[in-house]
Image (cartoon, rainbow, N blue to C red):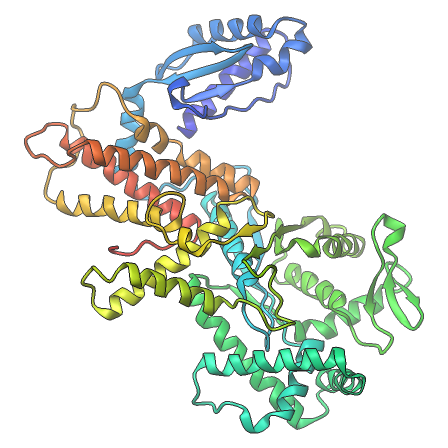
Length: 571
């Protein structure tokens, strides 16, 4: 379908050229109702005004050109409405493509216009603080971005920037020193250790806001941690850091993420400090004992990069981070940072600073903001301690799935593994089905449904197809078989769209396009499954139907991979 779309686009541009349109840019869309055709274009509407002719008249001339020069796989071309043109592909061509999909090793497409190398930074959790649903959102989006970009043939460097220094560490260490006797032993579980750290962070934060004396102590402790002048403080900070990182690694395994590189905030402090100092008078100015970037001069807002105590702020460390990225990967074409929407203005300043400091690489930065996931209690806040942690959400959904699976006689270990895969799919799909940047209302019951608009529904449909293929083992394949349908159905017409849908989702950084496509595809397969006896050794159409089922299974598996969703062996 990709090559068909490319050929048809070129032909329409040629048709417009015969009418006097130079350098035409057109797009082919998929009609919402497949009965209207496989492609649609508004090219006649777009260029009729330029040519000073009615859109319908221009559409008729485009159609006349295509009838003379059109490809053999085109069945019909029709005008719809005031000048839209709908194209229908011959069933034989689509059936042939379905068989090719069923036999293909991979459905990935390389794009000649794709960047050669892309850095994707995402998740970025904070040591000593809980890993919450906001981090899961960043992780789900960043991982899907990475896979979509890889699908186009580009190389991706997955990067994480954990925060392991700063005021939040000082708040936590201050509280830990008050509760040293309660500190878990090394033999305690990872969750016990991180629960203790989270509790300490909340206590330190609340005290910092309510007690002026404690605030002064914590501010002083922050300097001590940065300069590493107190062995006991250093030991507590390093122990908490290690415990947090162990927990992050455990969650990454559950979420299906593996980072190529982690750069820590503590390592960026001296680099950022040096870079900012070197650019005072060029990019930054001194103001009241601090070093700032005068954002107002550029239609932005002013940010402090070195505070009055001479310490680099988060902004300075961010400069160190982004400069380090390009130093480690000088051949990078694009560097994406997945972060919360609320940081949009902050990153606009950083992008401007980076461009001022490094005109070559600064423009390569792309910030993609995500929304928040809301529950009945409203927006989460790790500062106040009412945060919904990733562990708690996954565990809750896992228990709900296990309850649904009670009727099925699975060994306990297998049931637990399947339930976890389904729980993660429920969360990821809920995040990725909406446009990146949208806020999300999470419905636990709907998210784990095996029917309708949910990740588990997609998994269930894929597992169902695989069970059909297992039963069909030993039946000859369709290769070379003349028995194919006279008319293909919705399932086939949707299947051949996948590479183009995935490529567009990658180009526009929109995993929701894949999610929406997969829901429609699963619905078409389940309709086919309900109304068709797929495996009947006496029916000469059986090899084709098996090939169709295999094409669906491959497409769904690859589509779910793009969303970072695993497919269990059974459900």
